[in-house]
Amino acid sequence: MNQPANQRSDRRDRNPRDREESELIDRLVGINRVAKTVKGGRNMSFAALVVVGDGKGKVGFGTGKAQEVPEAIRKATDNAKKNMIHVPLRDGRTLHHDIEGRYGAGHVVLRSAPPGTGVIAGGPMRAVFESMGVQDVVTKSIGTQNPHNMIKATFDALKNSTSPRAVAARRGLKVGDVVSRRGGEAAEA
Image (cartoon, rainbow, N blue to C red):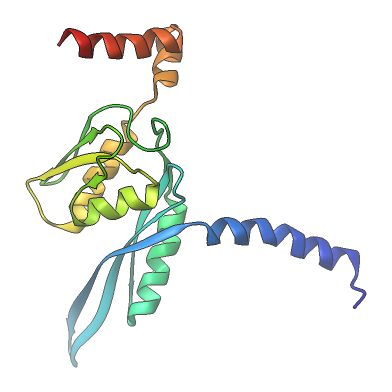
C-alpha cells in the first residue's frame, strides 16, 4: 500500500487532465466510407468528422481516417482537442453579435437570439453550438450542404466573434460605452 512519493505525485498530476477531458462534449458529425483503388482491387477506409466542446465557449473540430470506424473517430476526436478555439458568449448562452463566415462554397450567417429561442441550426452547425454550450442562436447555411465546408465556414465566423470588452480595449473606451451604443442603435432603428 505504501508507494514512493514520486508515484503518488504522478497520479495526482494526471487526474486534473483526465477530469478536463471527461468534461468535453464530443459530437460525431459524419462518417464517410472512402475507397482507394489499387492494383489488387479497392482498399476501403473510413473518414470521420467530429466536433468537441466544453459547454463553456471552447470548441474545436477534427477529422480522422482509418481502416475501422472506431479508430477513425478516435483520431478525429484527438485532432479536434488539439484545434480548440475560445468564443466569447453573452450571458453564457448566445453570441454577442451577428457574424458571417465563408469557406469554399459554404456561407453561413450566425445571429444572436433572445432567451428562449433555442438552437435553430441545421445538422453540422447544431453539433458545433450544442458542444460549445450556446442555448440561443439562429443560423442559416447558404450555398452548400457539405458538412466539412459548413463546419469550416462556421469556425471562420466564430473566429471573428468579439466581446464588448475586447472592442472597448481596442478603442480605448469603457465597456459601458460600447454596450450602451449597441442598445442605442437598436432603439434608433
